[in-house]
Length: 327
Image (cartoon, rainbow, N blue to C red; front, side, top):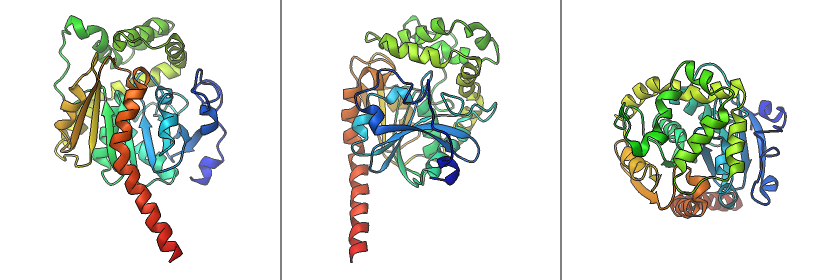
């Protein structure tokens, strides 16, 4: 880690590990909140575990906290880095730079600062868009890719203007979030209505606990945080143009694409097959949009199997280094 990062204060309060409610037992002993100076901005990441690095990229309207239920088990085999992306949580919120190419470059700089040249990558919802951009723009950095619960602008068929009744509650926010000002004007002071409706509509039958929804509402209940949360959507036209170029360079690394049966289903797998050659598709039964919170056991089983080859390659490389050092 760079010396400038080690000199930064320890994150505290809401948004940090110390200020997060209902964490799994022992979480705060295994994970710490850190600020990391990337050279362009300061990012907040929650880091713990040992082994080859695994970068977790959250979706909207979430933060690193969405992965809290799976992070302890993942940390047995990996050094887990769960980041708040630009504009979100405790990370810096500059006015510009919200196309996925720029946000992906932020995360490469984060991993550089932490000393990780290559890593496994997981991103759900808008984190899928960012993770695809990172893997496509920086193919030498990513060993394997897990994505889920999103289309890819510029690759997937566009969302229709008139939404079917079955999906209107889940998808209407995509156009709304892209608006320049009126979305913030309408939501400010009514975050509980807007964010609460998003979590309810996208959950399917298995709703998230009230404490988790309240945490995410509180996270966005100030103007700067709310503004930052919409910025990635406002960059979708730039991201779409970037993806038009990215899809001409197909991904060759292993990809696992996951959907909830009560949400995107096979959609993520179908999207990734348009841009990647080695795609496994998984649909988790009885699960909505919030994969890591609604089906942590099923997600962990899938991740453990998919990431095993990456884990074993890293262990073999470490063993070879140790053997060479001895001889």
